[in-house]
Image (cartoon, rainbow, N blue to C red; front, side):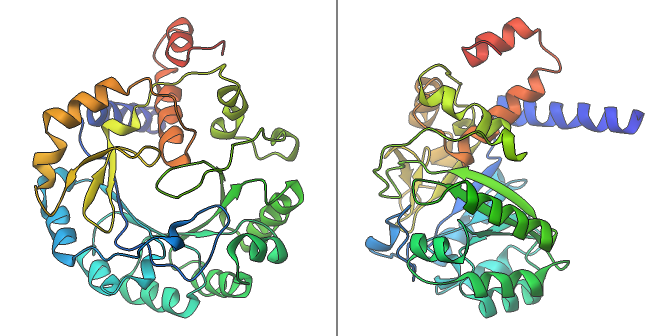
Length: 321
């Protein structure tokens, strides 16, 4: 019990230190928009694929700012990046997650076993028929093959994105599928993020508590959508990422570019007056409910609730909690 208490205390203090110092906690590497699918929830496949020079990735990994950073490899489809093997070699011994649609199953399996990928998140948005409708191609057999081959060899989870194109039955299918395979299920919500080219209006969610899948992220979504909840955007102080053209972005929602890594170093951009000004000005932006941003914000506030009076937490969240 004492060890658990001390571990929790240390975790909180470590997170607070990262947040206060403005270190880069998490970094998304998107080296290409290239993708073989035509998802309804995303229009990256319509963009020029682009290809981030491997030298830029090497510089990111060598920068002192990323010494303790968690990396996320994404796309498009990361495994379609021409230098994906080289990136996996460079990341040996580092903390990182590969996000994939899962349709390049043999490539995914081979890469995971050869390069010891520590964590993989595979996208699955419903039963095979629904997933095909959303993704444009039938990739369920490839997803199942990857999970069957990699279970126990890496940390595996499934990402389900709630949208107008799937429903509660689809979520229940994915829940049962994950339970059967013994892997974690993450629930995301469709967001009209500009970089994705997603423009549809976001809609109210059904009650996830009824099917025992509610989280803080999903629990507070409807309140946010109805403009009854305002959270500080803490994630932009500790999270960023790079696009295939070398642009370093403030967040995934807005078209705000902090600088370009072909022109300046990561340290120069991240520590610039422009970056610090934007992080301060947009603290109360409250313009999105993206999983990669809002889950972090809620996690930090949840940790704070163990140490701060409830009245202060109410003010932070700008609602009755």
